Amino acid sequence: MRCLARRGAALAACAAALGWPPAAGAAPPAAGAAPPAGGAAPEDPREATASGSATGAASGSATEPGIRLTLPWLLVQLVPSPELWIGPSGTRFGIRWQVTPVLYSFGINRKLSPWRAFIAEPLTRHAGSIELFGSPEYVAGPSAPAAGWVFRGGVRAYFSLLDRGEALSCSLGGSVLHARDQVAASYEAGIYTLFGGLGAQVTVTPTAALRSTTITLSIRYF
Image 1: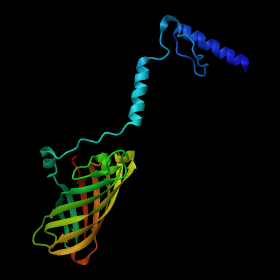
Image 2: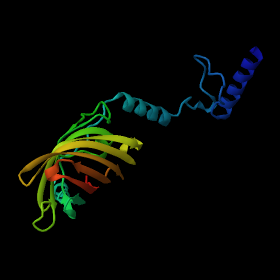
Image 3: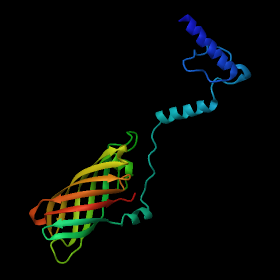
Image 4: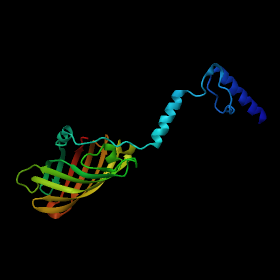
């Protein structure tokens, strides 16, 4: 063992004299030892700075995202998601919008605020969250029971499935449906990809008067 220790110290001394980085497992320089030949510093200052920055980033507080309501964002929210309404009277085409007054995220960095109002970044929503939502819809058709405006309001939970929800996530929710002066309960499930921008939702309303199944191609603009 003493022979190996001497050999390691000798290799380290030779590497320092030639200006090479020390070999893995080489003995560390003794306390108070002189710097290597040529006056080179034992550590690259750039490496020291990078190390210090990384340490500061790891120990510092996270930065809150600077999100706010803007006119362009409001305009793209007017673009609806298409859907198919399937009921006793047949299948009809519809469109749906969505508003999120409040969202609580349990999947983001704990140093950030988990609360969002109206605007929620894709990672904040699809990494894991619970939201209150409102969803007006319009179902086309003649004077059939399905035709006209439908309003939903409820709770939805998102869960990450792959890459913290950026590649794949899912949702489960429930809502209260109001249509034709009648109220019914609805249940839904959804799956999303492309940072949550594209997804599919299936909503089932079992109440007899408003019984239906709605398949929505969810398109979100952030």
